[in-house]
Image (cartoon, rainbow, N blue to C red; front, side):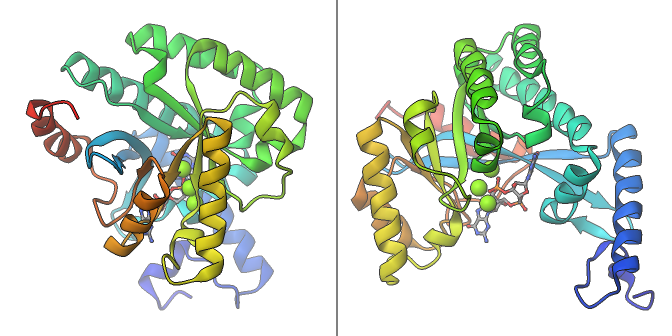
Length: 282
Ligand code: C2E
Ligand code: MG
Ligand code: MG
Ligand code: MG
């Protein structure tokens, strides 16, 4: 692996278990240094209203650019941080950065909701809702402008405790969404029990639209169910106009995807949304 300059942080399934463990340890160590040096960045992917074409939200996504290894994907390092527990510190940074950014857009006249990915360990902190509440107050952000994205696995682990935590968060007035909906191992019963606001359709179901009949059937069912339950639906990973058109036809509310824009730095995102202020309200 040494011969390949980019291989340092890569996980080769063919590598020995020892190699894999060493890489994880190295990656975990590197993450701690990057956080200490304030080297992570947040980018924001626009979420677009399917009926008006306007940006109605953003998802905050962490970015790590290493001077020698280049961009390191969160899909590679977030699972390592989750395994080591360091995700709690990263998650704290992400949350405070996202709240600060949303508050700054709000102060500049744009009430732009920001969605933040929350990991299980973070959600399980006894004082998580208190931390969120404190951040909102500190930055004077209206709670409805913060959305927390949770995965199904968080909700099934300890349903009674999860319910209590979700209720505390819902009471603050923040929005709650299920990320990667349909990919976890949970029952649908929780949709009825938990105080949720939105479902995010995973991009593996969006990819085959509109031609793949199974994908089309699954997405149609999710959107219909969300409508019946009064939940907003966000489709992820929309890359093609035909996918956007299909989702719009179903009455899906919003989408995010490379068709409109990837995650952008805060300045670039502002340049997309700022001119929209001048448009007549739809
Ligand atoms: P996710 O939360 O489901 O985020 C959506 C992912 O899809 C992002 O990948 C985004 O860049 C990517 N994406 C958006 N549109 C398209 C598209 O049209 N085509 C394709 N192929 N991909 C698209 P990203 O940023 O690499 O993040 C991957 C995952 O890492 C996220 O999945 C999330 O689970 C995790 N993650 C990212 N940032 C954070 C964070 O701040 N905290 C936590 N806990 N997890 C994070
Ligand atoms: Mg997400
Ligand atoms: Mg997702
Ligand atoms: Mg995903």
